[in-house]
Length: 263
Image 1 (tube, helix red, strand yellow):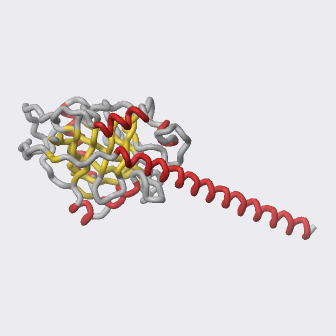
Image 2 (cartoon, one colour):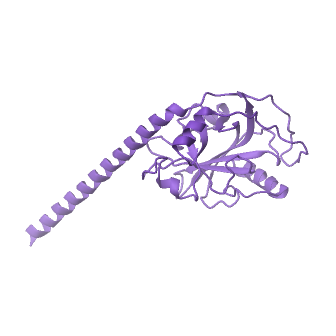
Image 3 (cartoon, one colour):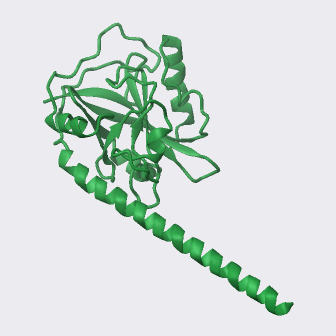
């Protein structure tokens, strides 16, 4: 009897080792697949553009301005055009200096598909950075949400974690988004760790002035780090979101104001 028990234990251990080895091989294969695709996508990387002249938009977060925001100078970004020719769901390219975030981002018919698939529609643990399917792909909404995985390899949106540090947040205040016909800068104003079901932050359908003011006040109140950039309710906001491991199902968000650039 003891012999059979010992044999069962040995077989169980071999099973655990075999499964763990398979998991490790699968992770390595997935990481290699993601890296190979990213290396090919680098050819579409667009050179940075100059920020348009600053326009004073006001000091109060609750003040509404009657002025119209400056719009970007019309042009065609050939790199984005080439990307879209190869990958039909691509919206644009996002780049955050001093991080590993320099990726194209897509928009699907829902918020599930690109959690699990890359731009070539292959199953992928890293998925694809993607815009909320409810948002306009022209960034005309008040709150445009962009999601990405927090990969342990440091890819996708993992290095947003660097903003969970006061010094890094203070010294890194912007990102660039390249679209087919426009280039925008994101001026970061807040970093926060939140629940995955936060109905204010994860609401891309904010339209009324009162709701916009509520959103901005809420962001200021929950922010771990905050920069007063004079944001107002007539501005447009971009929310970058990924997982955080401080508590179960935590999310971290980096939030900023969208501003046009000029060529």
